[in-house]
Picture (cartoon, rainbow, N blue to C red):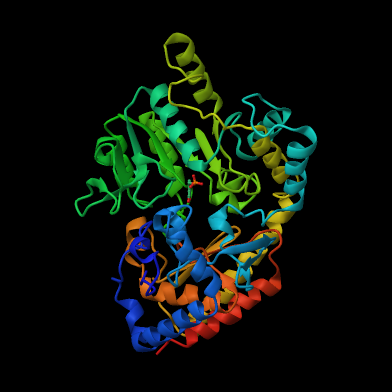
Length: 483
Ligand SMILES: Cc1ncc(COP(=O)(O)O)c(C=O)c1O
């Protein structure tokens, strides 16, 4: 990301989540780099000129906030300073300079249910104002309802709650190591599962596991805990699991944090088969891929995980995470805790004071019951299909060597054609300059994309007109920088 002069975010707005400098040769042939540079300069000027209040707020924030923002990821914003939020409803966000945007970023999936969905807001009000009790370290009925609902959707009969997908993954990895008695974890290169130490791995040219660039303060070199796998490469899975010391493979059912990289036919079946043969558990992280339908890819594709993790969106934006265990894993866990000193009810490293609180479960119940319905997903997925077709149309018109990939209610364009097959290929297809131009040009025309990538997500309130606006603007801004 190129810095915006004078912004305090500059020092912090480096590459993240696999954003690598331009390497692929294909883009340059059709994107006119001089037009792109001129377009980028102009879009930066327009962005800054029209948002004096956000820029001023960012410089006030610089006094006492690390990276000028409440959480350092918020520094990752094209234009050098983030938009400051005035209000958000449905799929519309308004900044403090008075600009309203069609929001396809949706809080990087945290707001996939739309901003402040009415059923969730009602449930939050009821819990806070009428019932009383935000967090009491006491269970409420909502927990059993939500667990039963998640069981129906994902097939895992036993659930526990966290406050983030990161924590759900961390705790699930601990449980997997505990029940298998194995020390290692396997994770796909350029997969992302939150700030989970074990997963910041990639493969070097020889296939050896190495830390991902930018890894901050690792407790140990991650190769000591993890074997890095390559997506869509069953040989890499065979090799990593063959020694029999891997407790669990943690993966999304499609990579969604390095563009969207879908599994090739047979890949997930092969992964399951190797896990079965080597006695390795399979953890499917559905935090983003819940976009595939009410039960994520697990339901939509008939997957057979041993553990499912979730987070971000299913309490309508109120912090929550969850992990579900298969019957077999739950029985093994039960046997372990009754026969050893493994401690899951106090200070054994699984759990958190505010996890499973009354408020987040009330919000999850309402969101699952009344917002994330089968009909809502049907609507969202149809819109993502329309979005994808609109983007493809522009790519075809200019014969651009880019690709667009859809996964249920989300779609993402990537600067490579054919679409990358692996995380490593997809990382190599990054192009910071094009990406900043697209994000700024869209924002200047009233559209937000997820700042970490080129992802567009539909929520129940997204409309055909919103998608068509993107199609029209995308065609114009891409056309303006093509040769
Ligand atoms: C697949 C996946 N799992 C887990 C996480 C972690 O979510 P959180 O940062 O809300 O803990 C993310 C975040 O992007 C994610 O994409």
